[in-house]
Image (cartoon, rainbow, N blue to C red; front, top):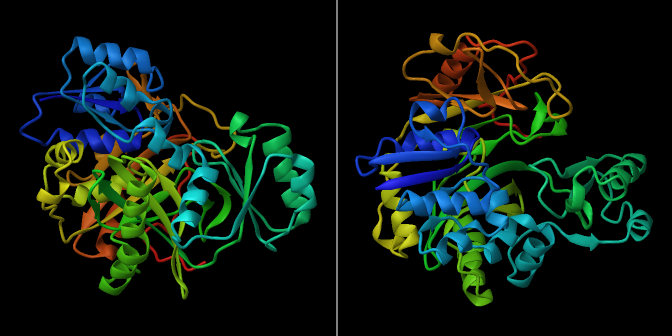
Length: 420
């Protein structure tokens, strides 16, 4: 089969790395790809958001399956566009993509189907919102409704911080039109965890669990990022919790999709908060998580192409997905200044010095003057496997220490159970 991956980050590198292992993949393309992806696939200079360009390339090259990595092309309806020209795609259609492109859409869905989540209220008027500051107490969770590259959430500790965030998001439009509507939520405490699920419209199958670390600094301090690292499986998951999640969240979500006419096919990412009240949904995403994918896919033993084809063809129930008993830890190395302003073009050294069994996933890199240099906020994800969490964590950090670039920053507590 000819397969095209859309995207160019660490998630797409992990997907390409896994699909390249399939004996059924004859040719693997990635648009636009990155330096790391180029080692396992042919990169094509088409932006992920260029729906017309992607469709033309897929049609001309007789692509059998197009795998959509990022959220933006999904929200633009790339799956619908490919279907219109008779091509198969792995990912939800535009209607389903609202589950990520609009937080208000998701909160309404959760409430309508009695799926546990935080209390919320939505606002489109900045003055009305300012009058309602603190309605759920503090900390106050303020979310831009639309897509904001994983950064559109502010946890305000007091009224002054809340008003400042509101002015920036809804007044100054720091996230563009994503801030036209704001969702204010009740602040949940507990431990965050992520569950990625394959969904084919009729069946929902969870992958192995993972824990992500959103804040930039150790101990979950500092501003939110797209994710500074992850490990799999989560230390808090057991059979009891998995059963509760399936009964209270997964099955009601699938039934909700069917009741609302949402023909969801692809990966549903469910962000959870786990506390004494049980699991509650923080967010839905429509695709593989980043960097969760970089710790989950290395543990998958089943051919990923087989699973994707089963999802597209609505026969997921026939597939048995096998997982390695090994643990995985992925540490993200980011540019200095991230998630704020940062410089690009810093030369990266040590990439060839890592252990053979350690995987370096590229998130923001490019080649300049025959050197691999930084080209994004999150630059690399270093993933190691081990028989225990401790072994995987130690190996990951040993190899992180061998890689360097000016201003590099990374958290030192990835793989530890964060109870903040």
